[in-house]
Image 1 (tube, rainbow, N blue to C red):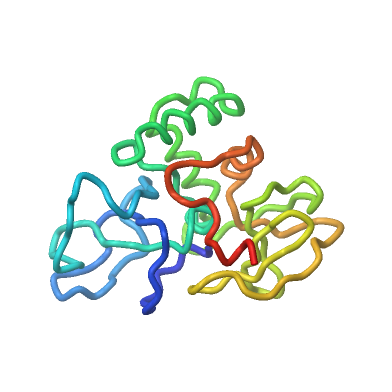
Image 2: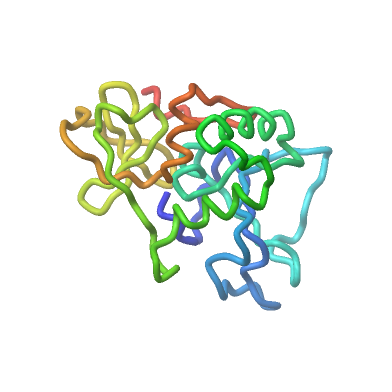
Length: 199
């Protein structure tokens, strides 16, 4: 959810892409390559990449679910999720009239997800009561999912602890424009929430 690149054994339900982030030996050298951060389906047209981390090819990323990808600042892919992207664009232009081109969307999301120094994560304040399901907040330096009247602690393998939704102002990790998309009732071809969120 913080947009960090971490090597773990767990695999999620969403595939991601930020460009080529690794060198010829497969070592991660940068956090992103460009503003186009996308969230994809795990399967598409039978394409299969082996080995992973091929020199000069995009770095394969995996997210627990779309709520996690949104928190990191990724939007739906226009290729493997074309129907989702068209719906996303419709919802996006309600809040951002005139921003119908991919470059404009990616520019805004890039500004919303990174701080002014372009090094760390940018968060924003919003009332807990206004946050939709699927938004992620930071509590004691950890990411938590907003789910109904509760918060669920995020982990690489799924959602764990449950706590009552707080009152007052939240430190929101999901970029503001993506919170608006979630508030519209967003659901797409990839799972918005990992099954552990329902337990």
